[in-house]
Length: 248
Image (cartoon, rainbow, N blue to C red; front, side, top):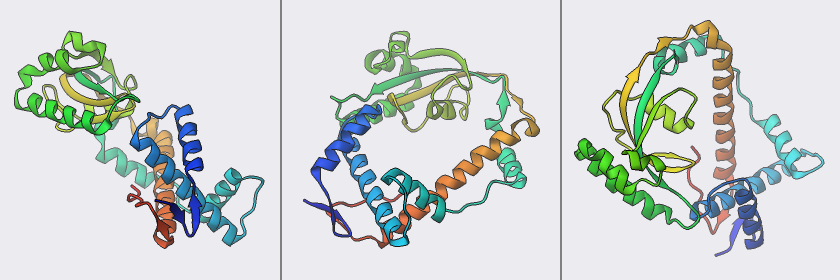
């Protein structure tokens, strides 16, 4: 089926080129990569069309899109009150010297992997682990594609900043002895995580993190405003041949 945006066709040649660009950037293959390529092309076309309507000009498409976003997407920087509120509501995120010991069962996603089947398999193993936590090491040995599987999935002890963000966020919001009730997806695949020990953890002074926290919250506000703007362009568009998922 032909995909078009407000009457402009998204060709298979363009989709293939975008897929190759994404692969070169290190994104894993599969159906999700094709979907991502199509969505990227649709959003680019919407923004270029809107820029033309508004008379936004620049030397190339990338600069045109950048100029459009800078002109149309407005948001406020996070003030100290917002930083204070986030700091008070997320105490687990502002600890220093905190250490965790954890184990995991990794289901790696590769170009040859059917991601949907792999996720279904991981969900099945997660159910087994939650029903009988004492089997975690056995399940890791049997199913994990990480070398730690030979050690029952044990990753030893680590602190904040030593694991990928999705994994770390999950671990440091759990208590010792818990198994995460949901799969955790990272760049490496799907993880079943069990925390075996938590130690230390002293609160970080607000003044020591205020500047970085303001940057983080301002960046989040920018992302939210950008997503809202793209969602508004999508809502007004005539899109044929593809159903665009809701922007998060």
